[in-house]
Each structure stands twice: as structure tokens, then as C-alpha cells.
Amino acid sequence: MFHFIWVLIIGAIIGAIAGAITKTAYGWIGNIVAGIVGSWLGESLLGSWGPSVAGMAIFPSLIGAVILVFIASLVFRGMAKR
Image 1 (cartoon, rainbow, N blue to C red):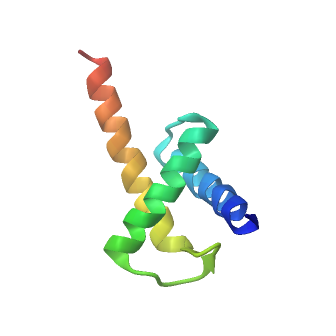
Image 2 (image 1 turned 90 degrees about the vertical axis):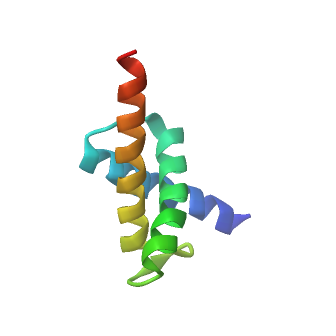
């Protein structure tokens, strides 16, 4: 149970950093989702290198989250223009 909470916290931090880098805000639930899914995406594409916290490699996770938030912002921006 403690590991699950730790994953949520680290996912939220990674998502918040990705949102700050891309200047996009989706709220704290969006940050958690972006951090966890971005972590999976980044580690799938780039592997698990660098320091890890709560089972997430920080640098690939952050890169994956930035990619995910950037793509999501493009999709939502395109949907808003319709």
C-alpha cells in the first residue's frame, strides 16, 4: 500500500514538472496520470537508466511525460478550435 502511495506522489511530481516545462496545466489528477503514463512511455521508449524513485527511472519518465503532455495539449487545442 505504501508503495502505491509513493508511486502516486512521484507520478504527480513528474507530471507537474512536465506541465511546467510545456506550460500546460491539467490539475493534480492530470499530473498524476501524465506522470505515471509518461513514466511507462518514457521507460518503454528509452529504457530504465539514471536514478529511480518508486520504481520509476526519473529522466526517461520525465521525457515520456513531457512528450505525453505535449501531444495531449495539441489534441485538446485542436478539439477546442472546432
